[in-house]
Image (cartoon, rainbow, N blue to C red; front, side, top):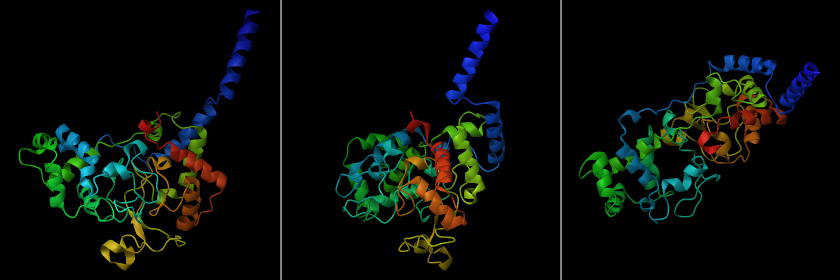
Length: 329
């Protein structure tokens, strides 16, 4: 009787594991095989961004305050966080953001998280680093619209809290535009995310579901890795938008507007895919609403790959594994 009861309990436990989606040895074998293929192509997100080694806590604290500072806009009601909301994975989930003039811009606001790992800043790469990038929107007439950097400095000097913070970060009499942007960059260099794909890459075969691993297999098999590889799965090159078939919006000529070089027409920085499932809508103009739609369109437009709805769903499932853990709690 005792042996019979043990046998029944064993069967019931096995049934429970299967019904609850438990991993079998065969599942883990499949995941190990895909992990072996993925390791040469991707990398775990580093803990620290480049150039962060000289950032002090005083600089970071100052930069965080400046990041939320609405006085750096001409109307006094817009900050960096307005379009790059840290509670929304660093975006505003709008196709294009409105400046203080109330007019929508022409390009989608990319996430600020992990941005310091990118090889250049902005869709057209016109800024080389976070420091240069931070100074742009403040003076852009279509964004925060201050007339010049001197006005920004005057506004910050008029706020009593800043004098001791700048002194702690940079020394006395240090409120200038260069230090404003450097402090903001120091804060942005702390905006690093880690996710379940990192865990998978370090050997945790159960970090992704089998459906997500099947999506990763498709992601590699459909040649998405042509542009989306490395620790950021992108953010490391320029590529023509409409490599095989033209994109629906041809009004924005991308990097050509920076360089004037014919070969740069419709070239844009390849988006990094960390947190991509949280940062739609997609493309440089925010013209594609869903992740699945963008996957199907990019396969056709860039790679001559026909991706079915079912396949796109699996790839999108994999991409959700790139959501930072601080956003999934």
